[in-house]
Image 1 (cartoon, rainbow, N blue to C red):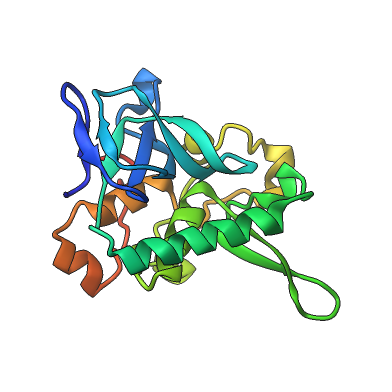
Image 2: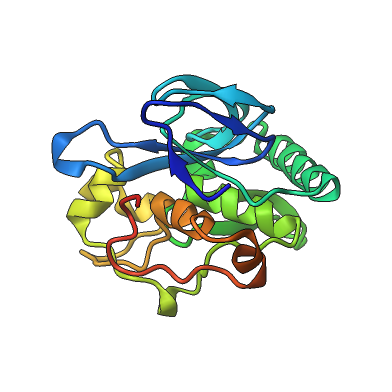
Length: 215
């Protein structure tokens, strides 16, 4: 199904479909603040119910509850679902014992931390980054993430999605200077899924200004 808002009716959600949450602030209506991956099939809704998801809160949670406002699907195959499950299991093992702050990064959307011998210690993600990289692990590329091709996000929009990223803490999350920054926002993932399945699978979505709000 194309991505949709579950305002008055529910919808069938498949395992590893993308679940989105919107801001509750009147000034940020339709602003997507968080995304995760559905943990189970089912008919859910309407707007505001909770569903079981895997997501980067932080910390990474392989099974948690999340408010359901939006949902989008690419109709994954059984093999693709297995690849995503394996990816989430790997991330879960890597994050064990790693502090929440170290697990999370805003820019870039994804980063690998290595040991001195060059082996991978753990991966860091934003919430959107976790979803994007989980799908990439199954060879489904949802969103363009090259910083040179992304809209820049100013500090006001940054805080609408990441209220915990205060000025004094930006560098902890990969943000240097006063902005704006080429950040992968959660809304971009839902925009990517708001296309025909053939188009989603053919090429990743290139975000444009305003895509932080859905639709």
